[in-house]
Image (tube, rainbow, N blue to C red):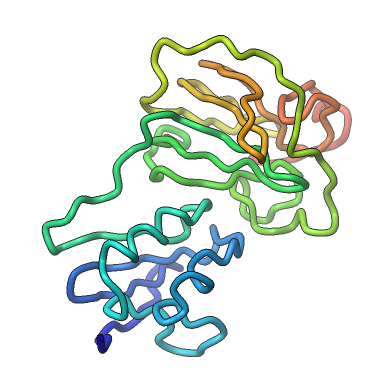
Length: 220
């Protein structure tokens, strides 16, 4: 299929319009998981100047599948062919990435504003785009993606809005139904309210232990 899409920068968001589906790309949220360029190299043209997103080069269903595998939410889509839009997950999850960020899938309300169903949140304390990860952890942050199991008590409700409120100079205050998982998928804890480390110094990662009070961590 020939693509007639054009990527346009607008407020830092690149948009590519296709016949059946439009793609939006937020480069500030991208953590380069590379699902897009590896699985659909004819759509996402790596290291290509100018128009590099070509939605018409594959079927909308295929593009939807790859977009929804973008953990950071950098890639979003809008269908206009009558097909279903992205739906919230049936179970809200947070995966602890080895030496990396917290990958969240849920209807996320950041400071009360809906930001979609996918985000990778900084836990190394170094990101210049807090609370989102910007890759600053690479080579500079060491933290297990396999924390010990804390609580496996089943939640009565497993979905719904997940409120994420970064505390000034402190942790991520999270309120809502959430299953916290190791990077390999093992359940670590099931919570309805918790505080997650984002200074990088907690001895009880991914949970806050108030180390931010003594290590000089600053963040809005």
